[in-house]
Length: 193
Image (cartoon, rainbow, N blue to C red):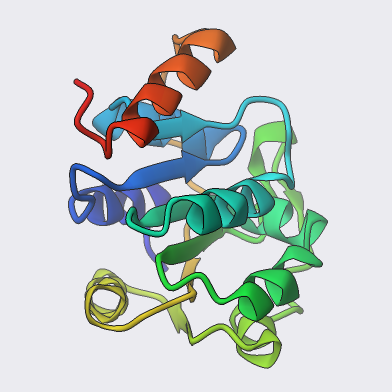
């Protein structure tokens, strides 16, 4: 297993200026925010389960930009119907990352069912161009390299630890600010600072 914050750092180290990074509610957005806050990041606040459909729409509307969707197993399970739609639409620029800690961490760490359901296998069955399960940083790096050289949609299931990171602040931007700066970054190809 990979500590989630390490997985997020590994992913964000590979983000290019024009990429859009969408992160789900709770700790994932907070860790993305503290690791690399940038205008091209969209922090989903209070809408669990909607991120992959938002990512799909953005990938279709902006085929020249890579779109990275970072969500948890709970969010992914909540919107499982999005996976076959993503696979059917086949956006080559979409990288769908599921950070699977087998729990609903933000609401008290209640167990999810992802210990019994293989979300990477579901992605393969749906028809993602590339679907892989990774359990260490080296495998994650390899999966991200595959995304650089092959068309998507890609699904990377990261088996992540649940150990909390102390002192992670909440996203300090208002929802309106998140929207406005993300819109400007997306429309400018990520060149907004």
